[in-house]
Image (cartoon, rainbow, N blue to C red; front, side, top):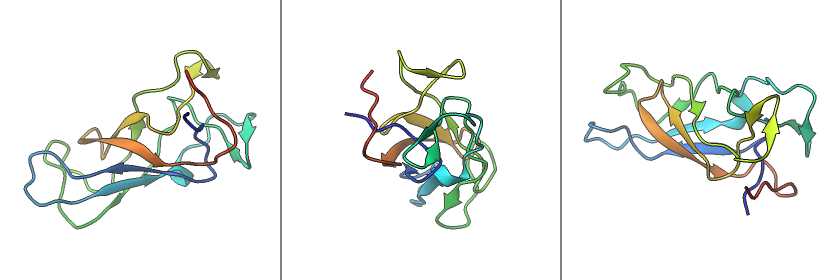
Length: 121
C-alpha cells in the first residue's frame, strides 16, 4: 500500500549523484513543495501531484552535480498514480520516483507524509 504525499511531512532520498565517486546523499523534504493543490487536504497537509516542485533539496557535502553543476537544487516528481488525479495531474505517493538536483539524480519517496490515506493504483 502506498501512502499519499502531502506537504505536511515525508522525504525523498537519492543515495548518491551518478558519475561522482564520493557518496553524497540528497534528500528532499515534502515541506519544501510548492503548494499547487490548494483545496485538497489530507491529514493536515495539502496533497501533492506531479506538478508539485520541491524548490530546494539538502545535499550532504559540497560537491556539485556532474550533469547539472548545481548543489541543493529543485526536485521534480516523475511518477504518480495511474487512476487518482488532482487538478488534472496524477497524485504522488510513497515509493514514487523523482528526479532531484535539477535532474542530476533519481530519488525515491522513502518517508511517508502520513499513514492514514493510501492510493493503491
